Image (cartoon, rainbow over all chains, first blue to last red; front, side, top):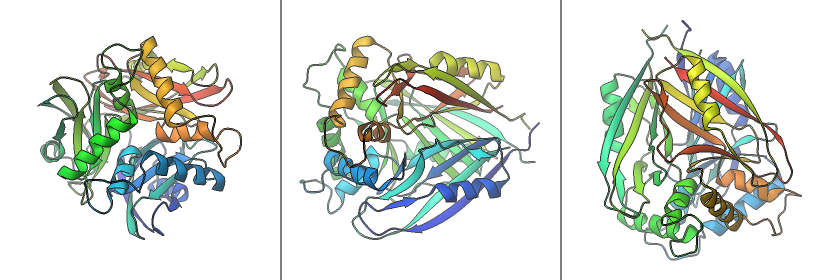
Length: 137
Length: 137
Length: 137
């Protein structure tokens, strides 16, 4: 019988406002390393209705493309029913802030070109909490 | 070594037909409370190819905006290859019925403005089963 | 106290190039059967920045509709900043390669019309690794 554990880490970040990208990959790797868990999963969650988590290549030109995709699929300049930041909520629904990654033999199984990014969708700079939960043996 | 458990709850709901919203937040909190698990994760899953799970603010005007977003990204009135309810399937692919939430110190870590909603995408009222699985210590 | 385990399976597939569908349902069921785990979850993950995992009905006409939806929401013929395969990355962001399914009493809880499909979004045939992680008792 394996020694199972749950380790919760609250990782605090500051964002610069609408469509700011913050790379969480190192924070996730550190949380897993510090947990002592070598096989299991790491669940990353932003308890915010106006935030996004993405797995993608952290490459400047691609981040510009991502911003254009988000902006085009959920435009800011449109009449919405919810006041003030409806577009920020809708972007967080289309690109939800909930990702799970496997941990195998001590490593988080990011693909070669995968980084985990938080994207701020709210309209002003925010303090954000990212919950990193490591579960396994 | 912690006392690990898996607790499965089948939560049954009835929907009123296309783009009906059902709030599952209390059902998820109850399942977690009743499980006795205080640290771990709760995975919520709708085993239905025409259903959606969303984390968002349960606010009437915003739900109207969500309906418009779903309808605009995947229109009903369009020619599809799959007969009768292709748009319902496509909506469930774009907004999938699979969410994981962390449980920390006895509480499900919903953000202040986050509720968990099931959205019916099929074209008539349905009975739906929501699987709530609690895993942890 | 239950006997908890984590079982990791690397499932290798070959894809035929852009928007090729590969059904993973049997591989997932086999990994779960072979793990001996009867209650818990199976997390399926493609560590690739240009891949998609979908839960949907594996029906030829519907797959054609899915291809059209992906192509329409993220067009290939558009000017992007990232060179060569930006559209492949953006498709993997909008439809991410990360799915979790519950296992209850020995069965993976696929809905009647749900299959798990990998969709290649890169522009040429690839060898792909699918990580299937089974966690539970």
